[in-house]
Amino acid sequence: MCGIAGIWGEANEELIRRMTETVSHRGPDDCGIKVCTLPDQAVSLGHRRLSIIDLSPAGHQPMTNEDETIWVVFNGEIYNFPELRKNLLATGHQFRSRTDTEVLLHGYEEWGIDFVKKLNGIFAFALWDSRRRMLHLVRDRYGVKPIYYWKHNHRLLFASEIKSLLCDPNLDREVDREALLAYLKFRYCPEPLTLFKQVRKVPPGHVMTFGVDKTSSSRFYELVFPDTHPPVDERALARRLRELLFETVRRQMISDVPVGLFLSGGVDSGGLLAMANSFNPVPLKTFTIGFRREDQRFEGQPDDIRYARELARRFKTDHQEIILEPKIVDLLPSVIWHLEDPIADPAAITSYLICQAARQQDTKVLLSGQGGDEVFCGYPWHLAIHLSRYYDRLPKAIRASLEKLLNKLPAAKGGPLTATFRRLRKFNNSASLEFEDRLIGFLSYAYGENLHGLLGERYAGSISAGLPERTHWEFLKKSSRWHYIDRMLHLDMGTFLPSLNLAYTDKTSMAFGVEVRVPYIDNEVVDFMSGVPPELKMRGTTRKYLMKQALRGLLPAHILNRKKAGFGAPIRTWIVSDLKEMIDDLLCESNLKRRGFFEPHYVSRLIQENASGRHDYNYLIYILLSFELWCRVYLDKQTP
Image 1 (tube, rainbow, N blue to C red):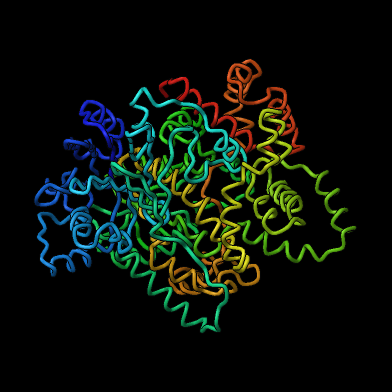
Image 2 (cartoon, rainbow, N blue to C red):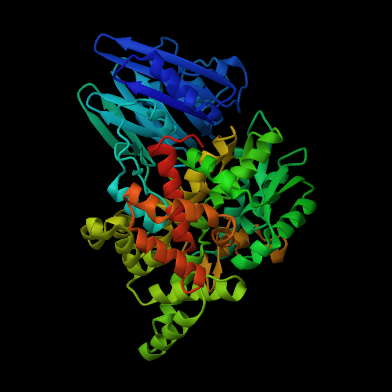
């Protein structure tokens, strides 16, 4: 992994140097600058290198072809580069390095920009073709690696991180109205939005081309599911999935530096460990994070750490545990600075600490189970949607009585029973809606009443018109013909996965120069699972059914079948304890009035009702707190 930056339409060595240095944490091993000038066009390219494959100077970037007519800056890994390299050698191309980067140059020479369809990997790169006067920005299928851009007239800035673009003082830091609404509702900004109105992301699976005469954007990949499924042999599918997973892990273990693993103790990370262990001649380094016992009780979550210990012992790993002590007030501003868009998921803090520990142990590559829930059907809302179809059959009188009962039960106090009440209340609030509204309801952390209360009349029309969930509706309209399980997975893969999970994983890992690989969203695995009948993704109340069949025998039965625990942090404890003083300070009436985004009296009401246990507004309060910290870092330009 690396950090890239560039300017199309201007030769500006001083600016590109600052843009590149700003993301030095992404690539501490090497740096490079190239300014290309032509009579009618100029491009400035910058690169920070994290050396993973071919650690020699031959991997230096920006990298060019033999006649220096094509230049590339690349962030990512191409897992099938050995096969592509072999094909290109057979057609006469010569290589000067063992890197996957050079495959991009010769692949473009041989096949044109359509060569990106052949790539299996995680990548974001910029390719400058001086003969055609074209700059191509490319992002991988699922959005694992980010690339941001700002276009103003005939000038374009692009980079791995927004903070590089902000090196140009001409970039206006105005907040994007639609992005803010979506952020409040879902706790992240969906692709291609960012909270900066003038900054956008290259969408996953897209090539954006900038030339003298025109700018274009084209999709080279789109996830699709079949309308119908023929009869299948379940055992044969499980065997084939197992083969694919082993091959994927083997492919993604290729590295000239040691590879470690996020270990949560669940089926996703446990499965990766079992497979990776068979390819590694030395003990793998594994990293787990744990919490104080009282924090676990408050959240109503199972304790991951004892399962992780069991798996570490079983596979004889070099295991390290990080116990998260209450230092969140010190950590949060730094995490927000690295996230850039405030992703209000406390899992970002967990990821940040694990990657910090990995780097301290000289581990530059980590395997992660990210994507397992989206590909194999593992989220709580998948089960909730499934169960709500049966709930619909209950008489209205019974549902009304249940609603009255649930609304009287505490929602924000500690303990496993309260956690159950909380989930039941959320289930009941959305269960009787139409499928699309029901699903969006399960995914929401702020509802219409909350948004109106927070933002007042200024945003009333946009809220009523459905602007906060516009991106989600666009995905749901595309999937209208598919089975409801496939529709959920399609929505997750297009929104939650790239904009939340992969976004915070990229930023928190690259904060320490650590590369995270995600085998469960390998091209071949996703292609295979998209064709699997929905009833083999979730059978009855068993989520990830086919995956568990494929992993049977690799993991103990109690690990395969254990209750899912989210990869997160004890946010409900923090809101009423460690973060309470910060919340009182940053979300006070005078500060909210000065900032001008939210109605102070409504924020006060949220905090009071959450403290009383009447409503569970913990995540919404965390969303507001993260936004205010983001404003201080990026609008007020306060150094964290």
